[in-house]
Length: 256
Ligand code: NAD
Image 1: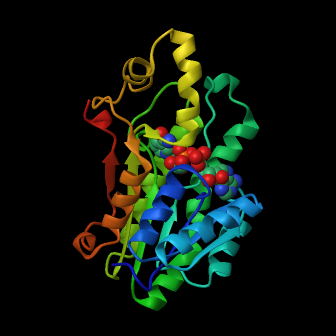
Image 2: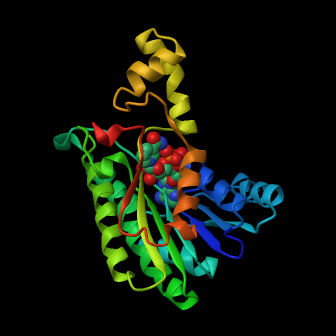
C-alpha cells in the first residue's frame, strides 16, 4: 500500500493523469493534482477523490510549459515521494510546415517539464530515503509516425532522461521508469469517435478497430485505469529493482 506517500501527478485534471491520480489514491497515496488552469471544477476533482478514497487530495495550479512553475509545483506540494510526469500536448504537421510556437510548446510541456520537476523532486526523495518517478512517455518514445516531429522528439527525450536519472539514483532506494502507452481511451479520444464514424461512414466498433486502432494489434484501447494500475505497480515493492526502463502498455504496437 502507498499509504503515507505523496504522489504528484502533472497534467491530471483529465485523461490519463486523472486516471493515474485515482489509482494512486485507491492504493492509499495522498495525491496532488495539477494543470495550468485554476477553476472551481479543478479543485472539485481533488475533493471528489478525497471523499471517495479517504486520502488527502489537493489541486495545485502550475503551467508545465514554464520551468519556474514546474519547480514551484514541487515546492508548493512540500513533499514528493512519487512523481508522475504526465502533462502533454500534441500537434500534427509536416516538419517544413510545423509552427515554431507549437514545436516550442511541445518540447517545453512534454519534455522540459520532466527535467524541471525531477530536478526539484529528487532532493526531497533522497531526504526521505525513498522515491518513485514514473514518466508517461508514449509508443512514440520508442517508434515514430510521420507529422509528429515535436512529439516524437520530446517523448524519445523523456525516455533518454528516464535512463539517465535511473543511473544517477541507482544506488539509492529511488527508481525512475517510463510507461509507453499506445492508444488510450481518454475523453479526448472518445470525442473523436463520432466525427470519425461520420467521415468513414462506419459504425463505432468498425471505426475503432479499422481506423483508430490500425497500428494497435490488440484492436483494443488501453484504459486510463490500466495506466494507473501500471503506475501503482511501478511504485510497489515488487518493482524496486525495475529502473531505467520502459513499460509498454500498447496492445502490441511496438512488437510489430
Ligand atoms: P489529455 O489532454 O486528456 O491530458 C493532458 C493533461 O495535461 C490535461 O490534464 C491538461 O490539462 C494537461 N496540460 C496540458 N498543458 C499543460 C500545461 N501547460 N501545464 C500543465 N498541465 C497541462 O491527454 P491524455 O491523453 O490523457 O495525455 C496524457 C499524457 O499521456 C500525455 O503526456 C500524452 O502524450 C500521453 N499519451 C497519451 C496517449 C493517448 O492515446 N491518449 C498515448 C500515449 C501517450
